[in-house]
Amino acid sequence: MKPRLLYASEKPTLDQLVERIELWATWRDIQKEKGNDIAVLVHEWTEDFKKTLESPSPLMEFEELCDAGCLPIALTTLLRLFEMAPSLERAWVNVVGSPTYQKKARKTLEAAARELEVLYGDPLPNEKQLQTQFSAVGRIPVSKLIAELRLHVRILKVAETVKKETKLKTLDQLARYLITSYVARMTGSFHDRPVAALIGSATGSPEYTEVAQRMWRDRNYSRLESHFSWMAKFAVAMSVAISQSA
Image (cartoon, rainbow, N blue to C red; front, side):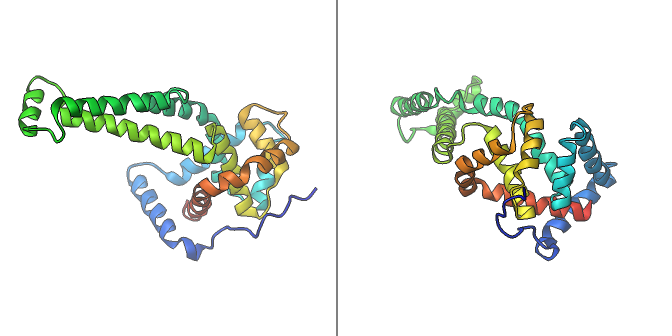
């Protein structure tokens, strides 16, 4: 079955990437002076990943997508996101707290900030003197403590907004969208079969099929595209720039 046509390939021309290519080349040259050959590292990064793929499939699927217009460095990086997703999710939870606890924590922190303002006054009287006194005994000045509490309140609000507006439940979903969108933008088609095989390999779910991938797209792709297309476009642009200056 031929992959369903999405739209004409969005693979940018080299004329559209002059600045990115020059920026990458400059950084590559700086690293080379430090003894780091980026071209070699990029090649090894890709080849090491391909060795983890079961042969002949999904290794054949990887090569099929490359033949269709995708670039190995981008496929490798996007597929490795599935390996990183669990640890990244734990890091995010460590910053903003458990999703079920976020709203309660935000209200508690905001209330604490207001209580400090009521206790010490808002604006703080003799703020510089208070800062000196608190610093002298190794304590955080009140104004800075209030600012820190409000910072965490804003972080929690961002987390709530992102979850509410995008309905993004896990980073696995974001990784699934990015590999799907990248392939579509580079080739003009979704290529559900090879994409499904690679996702199944990356997630340890060999039962993940072309049909499952198509159903996932139907439910999630348009929604995620409206929020995260800039990430996919960035992946496209940088993969082309890197491939031209590696």
